[in-house]
Amino acid sequence: MKQFGTILKFELKSYFKNKVFVGLTIALVALIAVLMFFPKIMTAFDSDDSETEAADTVAGMILVSTEGVENADMIEEAFAAAFSDYEVCFTEDELSVIEEKVINGDAECAIVMNGPTSYAYYVNNLSMYDGRTAVIDEVLQNLHQMSTMLSSGLSAEEAVAALNVQIEHETVSLGKNQAQNFLYTYIMIFALYMVILLYGQMVATNVATEKSSRAMELLITSAKPTSMMFGKVVASCLAGLIQLLLVFGSAILFYNVNKSYWEGNMMIASVFDMPLNLLIYMLIFFVLGFFIYAVLFGAIGSLASKVEDINTSSMPLILLFVAGFMVVMFSMTDGNVDSTLMRVCSYIPFTSPMAMFTRIAMSTVPFYEILISIVVLIASVLGVGVFSAKIYRVGVLLYGTTPKIGEVLKAMKKA
Image 1 (cartoon, helix red, strand yellow):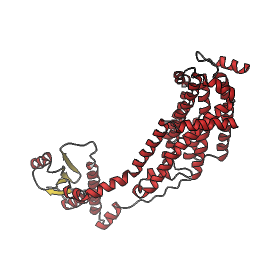
Image 2 (cartoon, rainbow, N blue to C red; image 1 turned 90 degrees about the horizontal axis):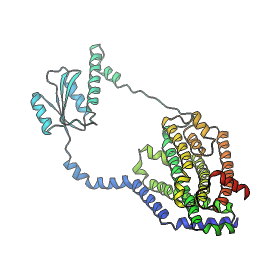
Image 3 (spheres, helix red, strand yellow; image 1 turned 30 degrees about the horizontal axis):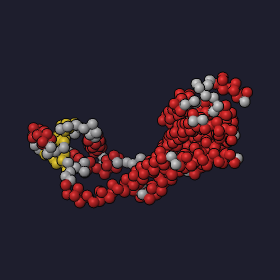
Image 4 (tube, helix red, strand yellow; image 1 turned 90 degrees about the vertical axis):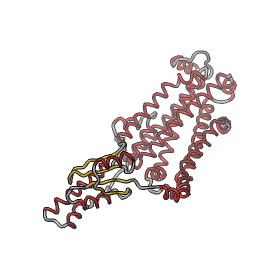
């Protein structure tokens, strides 16, 4: 235990002295600060320039020609209400004059009524985001329905009440709200993906560096392989957790400082309103998922004779992890997180940290299934850890070309 503590302290110090690690952490915190304070900064600029903008802003003009159309008064009133943000002008000019005003920019667009349910929409440059015709269609449709009702004997008040009836509904979710939980589930899965790839590779690189410098031969004689292996893995896990706590902790702090500026943004609010039980499950699966991959990366690093060989040696493990990540991402996107494939992945140690947490966040999972998944994952971490430590003990003394699996297993039996 003393050897483990010594190695743990040494590895943690090396992380905190690493300029890349410290610089990345500071950069992420600064980025989070900019994002969280952005609405407040924009509000300050808007308030400073509000008077100037109010003086310079001129509402866009929309020309409406209702010449020769019945119920012209109703059409004019409806258009004025529908386009209240514009300066709606009604004209009896000829078509050529109207076209010239639109081309010259005197009017943004023009609506020439051909009948109660037919019109021509004139615009100089048609934007791909132009949605005025949809508003016009709705206005004319409502007017036509009202005219039909009036001709059928209904009063104007009864026609308006029939057209403006409000439909009320209430959605009662007896399980989980997938839309509400999607964002922070995605953030957790993506964070786990990045941390495992980043810190797992760092563990493998550190082991390979010590091996290539021959320092490993001295270390292996003074410390047990298990202590060395788990010391490095726990140190990398703690470093990753500290970094994530600083980043997400600062995000929570900055959000609460600027909470009033984020009111109405349901997407951002859902991220910071994560239930406590879900946060606990996230930490459990995050730590266990990191451990099972980190010990394997450590074993891979011990088998590499040079640092350059790590990418090739770790490729099968990376592909396995990416495959699990893609399965979870596709299931989240489809909304089918309780598919047979996801259920199977919930009990496979290499995919359960992502799959089971996704199911917990976006579906209703019985507690016994969660417990089985956690127990299997803990047992797998211990088993894979002991197995990786044996590989580590043998691998650090093998030099030359990267040994094959059969050669490693034979060396483990002799050791």
